[in-house]
Image 1 (cartoon, rainbow, N blue to C red):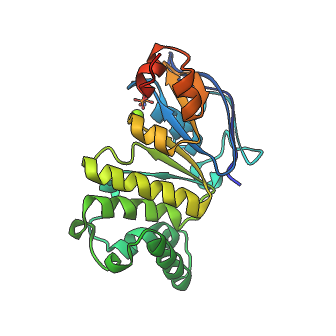
Image 2 (cartoon, helix red, strand yellow; image 1 turned 60 degrees about the vertical axis):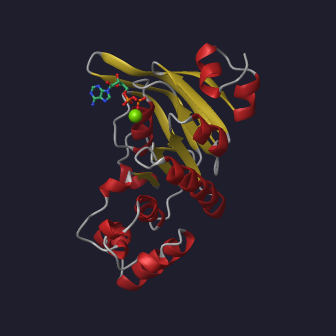
Length: 238
Ligand code: ADP
Ligand code: MG
């Protein structure tokens, strides 16, 4: 579950085309990283996959079903926001359970799912605290925990670690890799950090001005970069 197909997808903001015909098959359980210069369309494409941004042309399939016109709630995906999007007046437990509560889930079910997510993310000691009493890395884990409880088939991350200091980024990178193994969920991850891309990705998608300029494993991109931009980003000798 969680296979995603993009079929000639385009995005126009008025007269301006920012996504210019993207074809991509993402396998169930695959970890795909989008990279590319600022403004190339990474966030827009991710938001289109999540249904937060309308697709102007083309089709978006999830597990074979046409989701192009479906709202985010129908897609079975979750977007992991940066940790500053936590509710400050709620405990960690309440933050993590909030989406299930608004969906009308019974308290026992919410508690069980929050406890399981807290176990995976090592947040058990912090469940009754408010976000302000947590470190940056712990807060980011809560932001991920909010997504896990919804049992999505795919996670969409938009530069989730960009607000963290260097040491925490390394720690969280490791946490996200472990999470991917534990959940076996599809993950699509936007970053401009070369090390994050190279260490996390099964495949890297390089975007330039709304088009895919190369797709491949980190090793393929390192050994055979399609152009100078890819070579410079990957740090390969070419
Ligand atoms: P990235 O995440 O790669 O930095 P974005 O997807 O945020 O790039 O933006 C891609 C392009 O689309 C940019 O030129 C940006 O200015 C434009 N853009 C993004 N959102 C909107 C919007 N809501 N209205 C108009 N233009 C937008
Ligand atoms: Mg962006």
